[in-house]
Length: 564
Image (cartoon, rainbow, N blue to C red):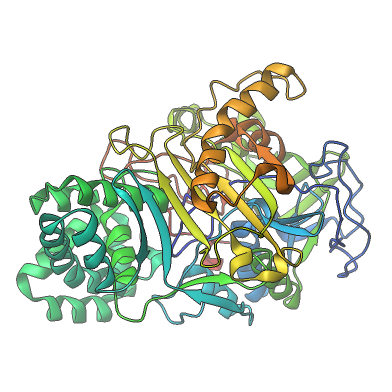
């Protein structure tokens, strides 16, 4: 999901997958990165095991060209690129570890991912590469990965190992859905693969859900676009205009009726963008399908966990002089003479921004950092009326591998009921067991597991609950049951919760409290082709205040330096 996602199953993205916590067990050394640029001190945690949020006085130079609020993937990418282009950049992070929703955490020797875990394209290069790979390349960094090509699928029709690539999925369709599905899937691929030439001609970072992409693309990517149009022929070139419409329109135009095909496409779309095919931009789905179902495609998992992504970004941006200050909670954005001029920390200290303030917080949380009188009412109304995706339930387990089948894969998708829809709460569970590919994430003979409901948990049923109350604890037990059942289905009869060394459950209130996410949301639920279907983008009505993620397009993860 992109926003978001975070976290979720994102083939070419790592942003916007909110998650949680950094427990106090086996605390590893964490960076206090500004200044000096060194790793000092141990990571403190609050008594309940979550990241420490105690206020501390910022001791570095209280000024920079650009101040970035938040060290999530989007904030780190933005800061790294700006530093790469000779900007003096300071990243302010409220917690005691960088990484935001992508930060790892350790408990009893188990190293957990808190956010995204499915990736592809880290080794890709060039304009069509994974956007994060482009940033890492610009920073002179790389991430060693384990390659694989499949995940397990558990659906009402049965269970099967779904392999990416041009031929394997046809076999799955034949076995579990029948010949009609095979014919319709072939019809779909025959239609979209020629269109993918245009989608590939536009780098992921340029894809937006608005008409502005046409003028921008025509100006910057004209040679590759014209080459693609020539290869496609007149009919193919004309069909390329559908790339900026909802993907469901392509499905409907082809007359695809098979329930399995439509359900499968809804599932892929939802995992990619947090919306079904009637809400996702066709360009995104065409790009993803052409990548996943082409010869030689592989998926990747960073060795040593997704924290390796954060580490690589931190190394890269420090290399170019960027500073990161941890435990530096931004209380509000300072606006003087109508312009953003810096931020005020919880400690009371003011940090000045000579050129810009960039917020890596959500649009709702960024608005709450601003003085109310400086925000135009039209902008307030737009932000308040932007629909939100749901939140998450999480289950982190550290367990004994004894009795678990040896061919256990890293990723598993459980769908309980197609009729309810893939976006229904308590219906889809995603499970990642990264120690299968990176054994160092767990003690010998053990596994580490992360299960979650992908942005479908309603915040309303949690709103106002005291996280120390029995009502909250009972609701946690009730709403986590769907994840326990999915885990038992995946791991088989050899698994017992009594043999788990670690059992952690996270809720929407966890997201709201520790990721500072408005209502614990995954992000904006903006539907392609609908009213108000464009993301607000990087700009804001406040001069010198910009966004870096969450409210930009689902492919944009960093702010182009030319906008500073």
